Amino acid sequence: MINGRLLVCLGQLIVAALFAASAAAAERAMTLKIATVVPKGSVYHRVLQNVGEKWRAAQGGKSRLIVYTDSVQGPEAETVRRMRVGQLSGSMLSIVGLSDIDDSVAVLQKIPLMFRSWDEVDHVRAKLRAELEEKLRAKGFMVLFWGDGGWVQFFSNEPRVMPDDYKSAKIFAWAGDIPQVDLMKSLGYRPVVLELTDILPSLQTGMIDTVPAAPIWALAGQFDRTAPHMLRINWVPIVGAVIITRRAWDMMSQAGQAALMEASAEAAEELRSQRDKRDEDIIRALQQRGLKVTSPTPETERAWQELARHAWKNGVRGGMVPADMFDKVERLLAQYRNEKK
Image (cartoon, rainbow, N blue to C red; front, top):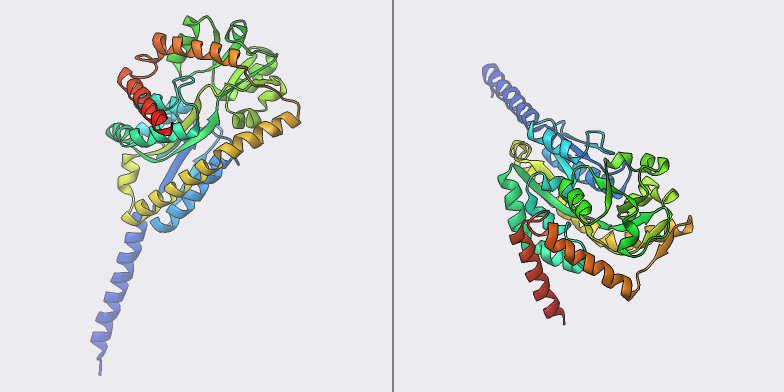
């Protein structure tokens, strides 16, 4: 028969174990703060929320993930700064923001007319992924997953087709991408440097009249209302990634890390599977409300390709994109295209 003293001891052990478990759960509980320029309610926002829910359940305790959309934490350069000082845990960044961490990633987006299809983008990214992620890791950031935002098209207030037609235009240029601004000026164009949130009011006031943008951004920002003409050129793919700081990663439990990576892989596949249809659906929706789309003729394509190759030699290779990375992409694509033949 268990005596009273033994019952007291057992009770004390149980209470101690419960307190220890509670303390462990509290220690695992954490808040991830993720910032992005994407609009609230967009597919990218929803994907981040889904990833956060799966991570939170595994991390346990009162853990939570907060997603700041619509540039409320500032432009991408500012979110990178905030991550570095510990004010943010991570961010969904385009190549423009990622290049502030390491310029090697620019190779996936900043070479105009280098890629001809998403298959080519996927192939090159798969070959370079380990190298690029290691460079970012060395700077203190972990890549959770890569994503794509569509092909950049040219939206303008009047029909423009040939490259020279745009030399009289006032063209939006991202404030965080100074090398591209310098290149545009050297080629005879007139970039107007703005933040993403300033595009629509600047279109409405006439400060700019042309916006290079993926269709999803044109739809979300309603650029087509004042720039109702689109040249379908597939200038560059919009590529980005969701990253978190090594500091935030190291604070997670092993279960939290595993769940986060699994959810991130699922998110990457979801975005990849939708990208072609998403662009086409959005362009059709924009056409239904008045957008006029011009597809380039062979002559037009040759003119744009000539401009792109000139840019490669006079500002892209060794400027916007490290020369060694540029050469790797050319080599990988040449091999890929030969194999496809």
